[in-house]
Image (cartoon, rainbow, N blue to C red; front, side, top):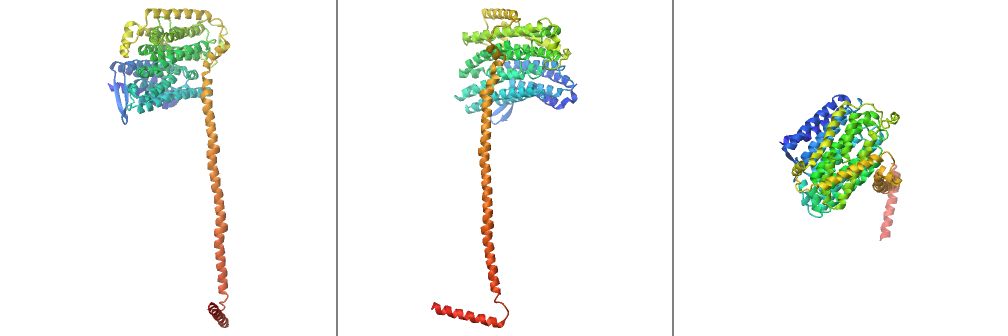
Length: 623
């Protein structure tokens, strides 16, 4: 049965690579091909979830590249494949004829394939490879319309932020090897020796929080909203941001082994759910509201992982994937039709495009946590696990659930109000709208909306027990009846209050409202605390390199040239001069030696007489 597993990951990766390289020449065929591949992948995912295949291949000495579908990954592969299919069907009608659909659909399939490898990987090296492909594909998808500089910059910010956090996985891998886990199997990481166990855990926690846009990394998700709406629907519902939460749910035994990691992760998720929920309330851009709500809703999954609630976190993940992908697709349909995503300009949009409006309303009410819709039951499963960590953790989670009702009802209130006569003047703020919704939008919207509404059955006693057995979490707590009643009462009360107050301004301090609207100034803080010091250090090192290192090289070169010139002068003036002097002396001696050679016999006799006289004088003087 490993053939099913190889098909599950090889098909989207291979087909995605081929489509990405086709270019715009096959634009008319690409959407159908992409949707067909996604449909086959969904079939393979269902088959893999039923048969639970496993496969492995040698990677390095002492370690393998392992893949397996167990209970948790069975849920994930079906969720990822189903959302991918829905998003690609929707995207078929979202692009102009001159856009490169091959690159878009190819990158989407590559991204989905990388996510499928991530959720089925049993060893850290393979997970790391898929993690990297996911990051690279997300960068290309967010900056898909790269000719607008702000979109390319947004892709860079998202990539660099998540990439910085991803370094934690490399730290974890090195620490695991140092701690004696040479195989780097995920299930063996809790056996690492101390203190490497704590280092590996810290690295994985940082990587997961960064990928899932949890505090303090949340701001990259705001920038990622520059990407096309289908990208947001896939990356920010069942895949990229969910990958970090999935990793923490997968590695709950590792969090438990360190004792400190579980509470730290739980509080990180709870605080993110509350703080980013308040950020969502302050947004006037629909996609920004949905982005903030994504960070907040992922916070519940992270809270579940830190509290040991694997089944609750899984239920939240699946329900949120269906809900949020549907909401992003509805926002994308309005953006295409009306050319705007500003909530004041979208007033009456649900009345103008009723099928999209109905899907959006159901999805938003699900996001609000209203019973009996799915996220109400899912949040109670999470909060039941959080209550084991203390009353304070439960209270923060409940407060975050109440805030979710506020931003969800706010969005519904805007889009369902009567359509004003001056609405046309507010359209086309982002792009020129088509004033119509694509025919391919209805089917995926309704399918996702139906799933968002009914997936709460996973929290009912029977299905909940089945899910806990499936993911190996039989002993997890279930919400008590009073908890279900309390959360339902809070959700209805807050939703009603938010509906009444939505028509008027809320008395909030200007500074607090500005901070919430600006995503808590997290990007500004990151630029101040990280980017500017790093760039300053880089400039300092560059100046040191130019002035000191390169300066020393240049001075050495100049010294070498000066020495060479001096050596040349010495060679020309002294050595060559000496040679020339010797030559001149020899020439003079030669001339002197030639002078007596006149050829006259009487001069030779005179020279002999003089020579004989000199010899006699020498003999007499020596004696």
